[in-house]
Figure 1 (cartoon, rainbow over the protein chains, first blue to last red):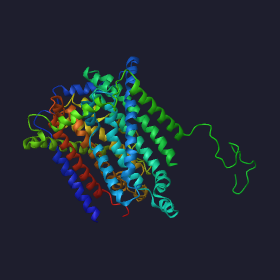
Figure 2: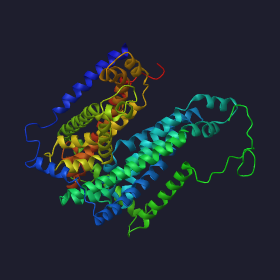
Figure 3: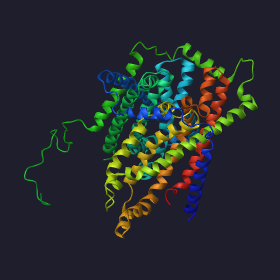
Figure 4: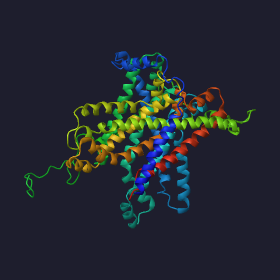
Length: 260
Length: 305
C-alpha cells in the first residue's frame, strides 16, 4: 500500500517536472527556421537512396577505422583505471578494518569525479592542456569510462552471492584468496558483458571526438553536413549503425556463452 | 537410446587420456573473442602511436605537463588583473540561470524520450507483436515490430551530438533542438531496454487474463504494463543522469543552456568563466544523481520485499 501511494506521488511528480520543463523553451520566437520544413524533407528524402558510390563507400570505410581505434584505445585506459579503483571501492580486498573505509571512500570519490564530467568536456580541456593529439582524445574517453566501469565493477564484486564466500572463509581462506577464488569468478561474466556494452558506447563517443578535430566517422559527418551532402550523411549514419549493431551482436554472443 | 542401456561402442575419448575434455576442432567463441580483443587493442594502439605521422606527446616529458599546469592556473585565474568570475556574485547568478535552463532541457529531453518509448515499446517486444502471449495480435504489428526496432537501432547508434548537428538545420537554435537531439538518442536506448524487459517478463498474468477472456488491449494493460512500467521508469531515471552530463555537449552546437556559454568562454579565453561553468556543471550532475537515486527507490520495491 505504501508502495502504491509513493508510486502515485512519483507519477504526479514526473508529470509536473515535464510540464515545468516545457517552460524552458522560448515559445515566443519561431521554433522552425524559415525553410526548415523544406530542409527536413530534403534531408529525409536523401535516405532514398544514400550515397553508395564506391568512392564514397571507401571514404566511409576509411573513416570507420579511426573511430574504432579510438574507442578500443579509450576502453583499454578505462579498464586499466576501472579494475584497480573498482576493486578498492568494493571494499572487499583490504583486510584491515582501519584502512577499508578510507580506501573505499577515496576510490569511490575519485570514480565519481571521473564520471561526473562528459568525455567531450574532458576532450576540450585536454586539448587546451596538451594540444590536439591522439592522446588527448584517448584520455578524454578513458577517464569518464574508467569512472563508470569502476563503479559497476565495485557493485558487481560487492554483490556476489554470499554462500561460496562463506564456504571459503570457513575453510580458512585469507581475504585475498576469498576474493580471487570466490568473488572474481562469480562477478567476471557480468563484468565482461558490461564492458562490452560500454565498448558500444565508446564507439559513439569516439565518433563525436571529431568535435575537437579528431578524424573518424563524426568528422566526415560534419564535413558532409557543411556541404549539405545529405545522401553522404545518411551513408555515414548507416555505417555507425552497422558498427554498433556488429558490436551488439558480438557482445550478445559472448554473453550467451558466458551465461551457459 | 533406452535408459540404462549400455552404449554398444565405448565412447570415443578424444585427446587420448580418459576424462580429458574432448578436443574441439574450432576455437571456442570465448577464446576467439579474447584473441580478437587482444588483436584490436594492439592494432589500435599501434595505429594511434605510429600511424600517419602522429605526434603522440611524451607524458613523461616536462613540456607535456607545462601546458596542463598553465591551464589549471588560467582556470583558477592566477595572475590576472580582474577578479575571477567565481568570486563575483552576479556572475554566479547569470550562470545559475543557464544552469536552470540546462536542467529544464534535460527534463524536457528525458520526458520526450519517455513519451516516445511509451507509445512504441509494446509492439517492439517480440512476444507482444508475434503473439507469444497467446491470442492474435493485429497482423500489421509484425511489420510495426521491425520498423520500430530499426528506428530504435538507428536513433541509438547515432550520438546525441550528431543528431543535434542535423536538427539545427530545421529548428531554430535554443533549448528545443538540443532537447530533441537528446530525446532522439535516448528513445533508442530506453526503447530497446524496455522492449527487452517485456520480452523477459513473467507471462503467467497475461496468459491468465487471456484465458479469462480479456481482450488484447486489456491483457496488455493489466498483464504486461504493471510489471514493465517500474523497469521503464528506472531506465528513464538512469538515462536522466547521463542526459544531464550530455546537455552541455549538445549545447555546444544547438546553442541551448550552458553549452553555448561554455564554448564562447573557451574561444574568448575567459578561463575563469569556464571554471565557474564547470562548478555549476558538477553541482547539476551531483544533484541529478541524488534525485534520481531517491526516485528510483520509490519506483522499485527494495530487494527482499
